[in-house]
Image 1 (cartoon, rainbow, N blue to C red):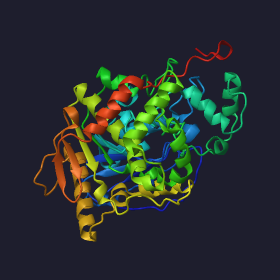
Image 2 (cartoon, helix red, strand yellow):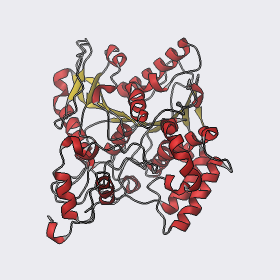
Image 3 (tube, rainbow, N blue to C red):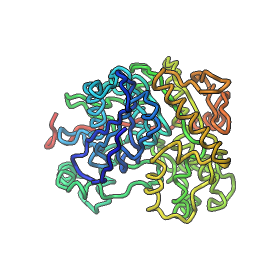
Length: 467
């Protein structure tokens, strides 16, 4: 395997593919395409390239860059700014792989897509997008799904206005001026605002449901509606997350604790909407009590803080998606959770600054298994568990099933009703019954009543209409 050092340069022309091939004469090798994470805002393709997969001489790995932030995800519903530019970059990459990977010894009919956090949301969105059908065969979604609050914009025009507010732009209610403002920002200015620390578990600029402009759309309806309809290709999928994934929010605790105590409703996920503030406040208090009881939110409730954001951003969306898929007739969803017992530290440092969140995210993304799974046990335990996980994923990519090497389980069964079974990953691998059923049912009751379906941008005012 030949590795070439690259200098990281942020530029507008950013759709670049990195193809890693093993030193073998094998032909038609399975292909693993990895989608990088970073809140749809930061990151780059080869931030996570696992040489061990290539050294196995069993697969080819592809990473890539795409448009990010407002450059990739501003969604105005006009011909010039229809939305989902970053997702269409990703589809373009998959089409390139389909048409060209055979030249590198890869099999275009044996492509698996994988991702972490927003990269995971991306691959999950690919699985329900008509635009991406036929471009891959399997999906690995690590800590991010299409139904997460940060995955799809609930109201793209409102988000565009909020983002413009960050520039002190005042004419946000004049659509013509709003579009003109965005189209005349430089690339550097366009992506200059930090949206990683929003209390509503979104990043403003993310994929969207597109308005019908008579052209190919990446997403023509909300993921929930598409899954419920069953009108998508049901491919083998690995779905999972870490039990304390919400620790990525800990650097913000010291900035948020005051407001969480007096206005917890500001910290509800953006995809819950209410008829009035009184009802929102009532539900917010119910949720706050469920996680924090009568405790004052602060350093002493760090564990509860982590649990809340784990469940809001990762755990419940994953369980919700899994259940929706199963109810639509999908019988090839494999569900897992990584135990909190395998983390070296319970949480990130409390005194880390908000700015550190970006660097912490980058650190996690470098190598999911190595950076996230810091075990309390000795080095050999870590090496063994990590190697088993990687070989399990490799078996999924090459064989179509997540076969666990050296395990008495041998077969990791797909999830059925009530989130059972799931693979519990700690010092040992166990197939357990329902995953987080009490928490899942709590959130299910709330989402059944208050879920706000993502909508496409409305047609622009008549003077700007391009319909």
